[in-house]
Length: 375
Image (cartoon, rainbow, N blue to C red; front, side, top):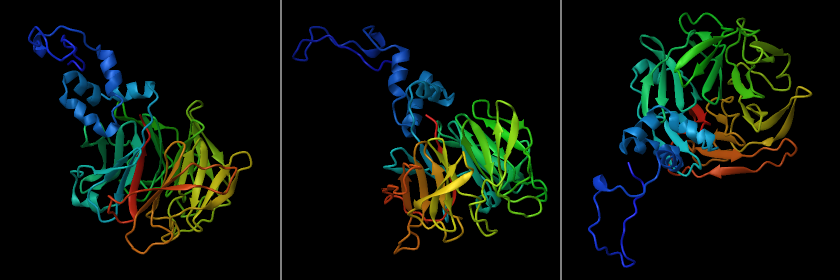
């Protein structure tokens, strides 16, 4: 395919010779490499259109090669996916979040649709874990082709687990075994979006469910939760791929109020710094790594305390924090608000920027939310 063609004509747009047809024209054109470099600059939400250009570009998209090129060129374009209460479709918003779109409906059954689900991303995949009538299942949304596909399955199917994303990889740990629903797990796995496969990791130091995860300092952190005796855990631990081992952090959440009615800890990493949204006070806190303490940074503009942190999305956009939920002051029970912020641990005067979501008429209670941080 040719993106640029030069026609020989005089300055008035006329020519002594008839303009040649595309199939016969052998004039100057862009190289495949330059064409690719130009087209990868299209917004990610428009990449599916490349499949209609020719076989080469269709292969570029379907193989995921386009994302490798974008990564090499330094493109960072977060996409946010969320499932709100009362909705059958997931919604997607692509940076700079000026528009939204519905994803195709997941072709699953009644049990999966109305059951509890967990979501996370890896590369250009959004993965949603739940249970169908036949058993545990993962549905995979592939951004490039805008379609849902089933699998691959975890080695140890689980729910109520911690997860985190790092490039083409996703990490999961802990949770409850969904084959028996009677066993709290200490197992962990890593998903590779390029090979579409799961790899078992060493076991954690502590069995835990209702825990949260994040990726910081090139390590996978698992924080809080409950053990097999329903005891609240204020410890954390991290997996270091370099040593292939887990390291325990005693009393990591000693400054964060714990309650059985609360959601798993609301945590997110911005600029390699860990933050939590305290659902008991609506306060943002930053983790001071050296002292193992949490510093207060002021209140967030959403009601995280309304239902103990449930229904609120608190995520990382890389150098910004994202929070989605009900506003602090609302005249409409179903009002949905979205804010971003570039946090600074040195100041308590945070500047939250509201995202105009007037085109999104969704319930403020968010069941699932995941951010695709890739290129």
